[in-house]
Image (cartoon, rainbow, N blue to C red; front, top):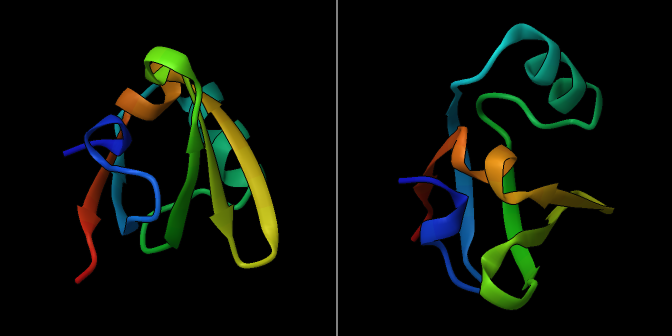
Length: 75
């Protein structure tokens, strides 16, 4: 499951990031790494972009970035 499979308001945990090292480093600099729990705040039309909340930070991701992040939905 990846972020595009979630709905607004869902809370999930990052299981893995499956991408090249440069994108992985950029995501890690934003606080996106394995084990982080986040909330989906908004999707753009057609789920082309997403806004997620990690702690007090809002982070926007593009579709190809969302698809490379494997998540597990929290109950």
